[in-house]
Image (tube, rainbow, N blue to C red):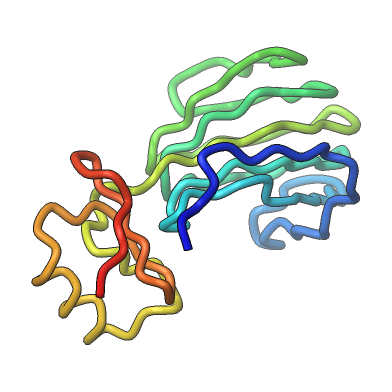
Length: 165
């Protein structure tokens, strides 16, 4: 079944608990919540809403991430840079491998965008795949750029998503 070209909805739902790794917390009791807004057909690119109450904590980025602050403010400390305050409307890009110390000043809410990890050419991050399925589909799909779901939707920077039989 083909995916709709455009999907719309009104965001009016509670966020789910999304606890910060306890060993990352420096000060306070920050309580994070989030909700996935959308993901690509291959489930490697995501858009989400995330919020957090006051506190200081470390954050480690395993993939690129772009955020925009929707409510509240934060102070970020990044190695080699002085602490800097960011607030509503500010956009921040974190490269994969970045580390930052977050200080949520009261309540903060952001939208986060995570593009596909193109360094993972056959979707090893997709928990629905067996290793043999990954290898088999990679052999049959030259130029594969991201993972699959059980209904075999692929993403590629050079081809439109297509069904694999």
